[in-house]
Length: 157
Image (cartoon, rainbow, N blue to C red; front, side, top):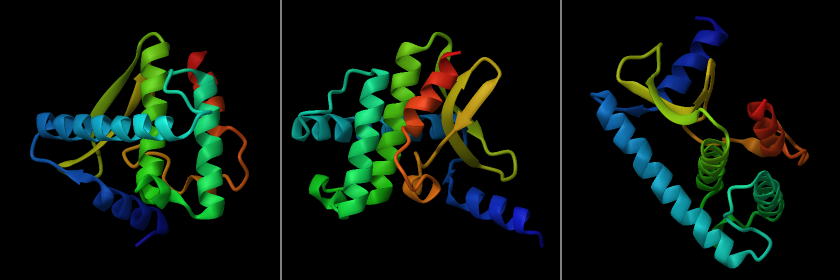
């Protein structure tokens, strides 16, 4: 079995299992609501972060993430690192869909496994799926280089 196959299989296994598209859409809608509730709570505790759906707020949220990661303090917000990364993904999607014309949330069946679904944003022919938010963000980007901000700017084009 190839390494690529193992990776796609393990990714597929990590996705939500639903019998129907509607069930998956409802599930991911609930996840977005819960994450946005967390984001609003975070903004109450962090003066520098305002939930205003601007590209600048993406920078501040990402800086906060790196601070929490470096100090291992995600529990300050009663969250795990993975939950915070999921919330970052949801907030990124909310910023994109509320400020970029034609961008929208989508839920699609994972093409390599039956009854497995992913969510993300779509704009024209571009789809960016992130069902787990920005999972292992620091491991992928060891230094804060405003990845969310730059990704947002690319989607604006």
